[in-house]
Length: 334
Image (cartoon, rainbow, N blue to C red; front, side, top):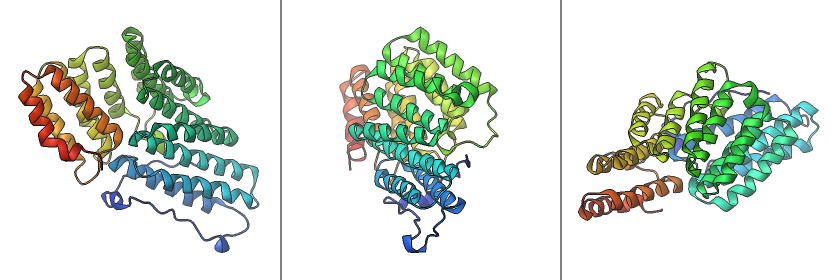
């Protein structure tokens, strides 16, 4: 299957809130669907991914669904079986992107419907890569809903895919996903064991190989970010802080939304060590990073966790109130 690596997210794309797809008018399309159609739709997926990396996925659902509809509509033309599978794969990718957009926005009910559809399309495409993406997102959705046994099961399904069994990069992500679910479940020992497996398998991955857009972010920086979450959840905030610093040192600035998430996690780790003033200063960088862009719902929820923990751990109520007053406007949904 034709896969190209993720292009860097240009800052100018951040203004395209309602991203139009580059669809060719029906009358202008040839009867025979070809590689040019696939590449055109692949470019649209990559542009959506670039926007997601820059400002978060919120607001991208409709553009993604339009892309999926276009990929499926092209199958009404005369196509080969191989081309039909490539179009099903693109439809799965667009539909999973729509689900990711809703998860990032905190609109979880609609995300599940899209993931069910994406998994069906991945099966029709016989595309294990897209199946792995869908199970990874389903685990994320279950964690957001606090359905941790389901998150563990989804992570296990991701580990069971052929691509995760054969490719250490995918195996690393699946192990990290399992570690996250187990840490949320309170199984610290097993979570740390899976985290170790994620590190070991990533060390065997060839990061120079071409890879799908959705998994392009997974590498040392992303694993450090996930490590920080697991370590904090199992009660090791000092290790979580160290992992957050390593993640931010490695993470590309094109992944602005991920940098904001990791910075918020760093603030939580500092807070959980009793350094409330430093944590407040660190959390303020989240708003600076996302300046000019509405905060995605998932990031707002994470800052809500920070506020609640700040109230519980701050040496005085004044510090928590000052933080809330200072960032009330930036934090408010828009």
